[in-house]
Length: 417
Image (cartoon, rainbow, N blue to C red; front, side):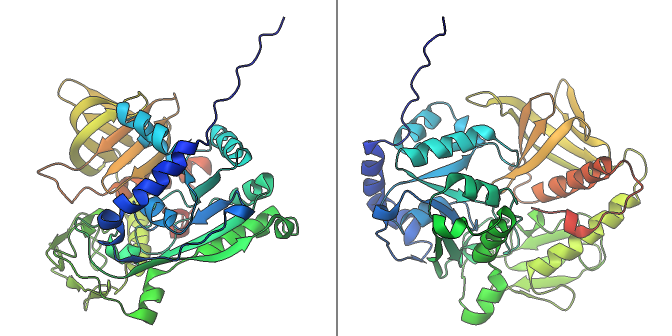
């Protein structure tokens, strides 16, 4: 005799609407005013539920996007907010985020999305799964087209601008400037039926694409703040001029290479004024990838690429548990963590995926099911840890492995968020 299945717990609750209405007012002076964020409120509930897709520009995008609508949104969120112990329970009670493993396919997420929509709740997603480093959208997984077709609900494309220069992912301090969001398009099921999965994926890319520098050329807003350049070491891990690794330093608004003395100034427009560097981080990023590829191709056996002090966590447990302070050592064979009493070493073959969390953390997904979180922010190392370097290096060696060894060329378009 089959056991009766337990009924699924409801995701959509009346209390979520109350929480949504209450925090709209509470968050105004905390997020809306400091970010000088402008939005139009839309009353669209009668045509919902919706799948709401947005471009990811800063860490508080979900909060800011929510102000445009008159109903609560159930956001697909990184699993890192689900291992905070009691804080996670509070979050689930108040807003019920939908769990998604960062940079890893997750069938459980799709089931939760479907259930939420079935119960009448609208779901929000930042499809790239990553906050931009450079002001240009990270890659969008092509599977989004298949998901849209599968869900068969209206899709809202919501585009956010100005937030990249307000709080870049690499920055230490927030700037004050103009930011805004708007609905670019609503795609209804009748239109979805006429498009292929590939066409739907391309539509998502086209409707959500933002190049922050192209927007800035049009509007010329100023983003004022202290120490505007500080933190660029997290992105610019090598000098774009002389190609020396770990040679870039920042102080206040200035950028300088300690090897060749090239320098530049990070302006209030978000551009870099320099005779030696490109004026946008998008162009600098493209050069950095080529520099890194050339550097890695010429490494000798077991070479240390970067060493960074920080704090290592077991991210799989709930709440996450501290393993200890250590040195994270990135090499051409893998990543090892040198703790006080032991060394934890993982080859690239043992690592399934590496992703960046926030501004100074990396998540390492192991093939054996383990998951580690390394936080490179310390008092002695407040801004020089580059999670981006760890990600690109992992991608480089992982790609070579997937292509059957070290005989295949790798180009810069393979690397990045």
